[in-house]
Amino acid sequence: MSLYDLPKFNIDANDIKKSFSKFLKNKFLFEALFLIIIASAAGFMAGVISISYFQNQINDFLQKIEINLPQIEKLGQNSQEYASSFSYEQAIINVVKEASPSVLSIIISKDLPVYEQQWISPFEGFGFEVPQYVQKGTEKKEVGGGSGFIVSEDGLVLTNKHVVLDKTAEYTVLTNDGQKYPAKVLALDPVQDLAIIKIEISEEELKNKATGDFQQDLEKQKFKAIKLGDSSSIQIGQSAIAIGNALGELRNTVSVGVISGLERTISASGGGFSETLEDIIQTDSAINAGNSGGPLLNLKGEVIGINTAMAQGAEGIGFAIPINKAKRDIEQVIKNNKIVYPFLGVRYVLINDEVKEENDLPVNYGAWVIKGEKGERAITKNSAAEIAGIKEKDIILEFNNEKITAENSMAKIISNYNAGDKIVLKILRDKEEITIDVILGERPEG
Image 1 (cartoon, one colour):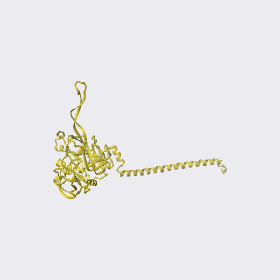
Image 2: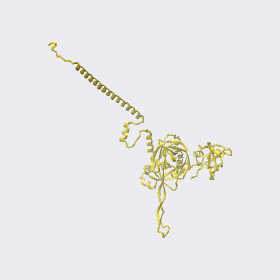
Image 3: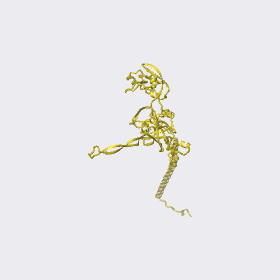
Image 4: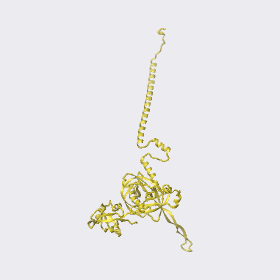
């Protein structure tokens, strides 16, 4: 075969141009598709790496605040009782759970007259009648409520004096689990708004609970006493938990706040009862009517105060008596079945700059012994002051070497002593300083 016998091709320039153009288009499409695939793969890998990184960061953060997702899921599925992974929140839950069995609602009842409407004819023969209310005996009714808490296994209960002040009323305590017991007022503090009552168990109740096992019966009569703390160590800003019978209806209501202030002096009144209270704790834990006498607790579950009063016309301002003021009352009732306070027996006015100027006194501090505007005696008859020879218009400058001021009143100082203690008074009499030895007496009731 000669070379001329090879197949011949007719090559047109236009065909070459079209083919080359088509080739270029296919090449660009392929390259674009390739780039898209590469970019998608890169984006997917970057997403996986980012998610992994952020998940690790989140898990590290959650571990720092003591939370992990598997634990929360487990609690939601398998636990019937909520348990917080926040240590602060769980501390409150634990305190309430531990203290609530010792917190009581106090129900105040009285025999009140029952009236019945009757129609009578005021004039015979006129044929008309008028309504008249006639008493038909008496009926026991609830007239109020408050709170208290158990401080001994045999049923001693600490509360406010103003809660159990009515001597004609009957008192019943209601436990957190719904048990009712009558209660007897044992002692009223003559100075502080404090009282101690005793849970009483009737013979019938004892018989109903009797099992024949003396030790077991004895254990059944024991009550859960609350833990008492130390109010001298509390700080402004620390957490405070109040528990009480809010409004006299809502048993064991819990409110949480902080200690807002210390060493407050307030004038408390209500229900015909009024007194000045010193060294009082201020808290923003909600204290409502009916909360009176309930405990104010710290996060260790210890009582640091006795809820006493709320500020009228304000929100978040409540007051509690420091528990250390009540410890002596509890000890005295256990030992002597009564509360005894030392008593000097003088009526006085605390001196400050204003009192000094108004009365032309030689000093701006001390307790000025003076009779009242209505003629009240300056020196109580047969009191320690009268026996020691204290006179009207004396200025008591120091009580056992402790200076008496408006901030450090004599009432505050004397509360640290006991009846029968021998003390020394520094007195300014007719511009001359003298010292007098005094044996403190016992404060009379009422």
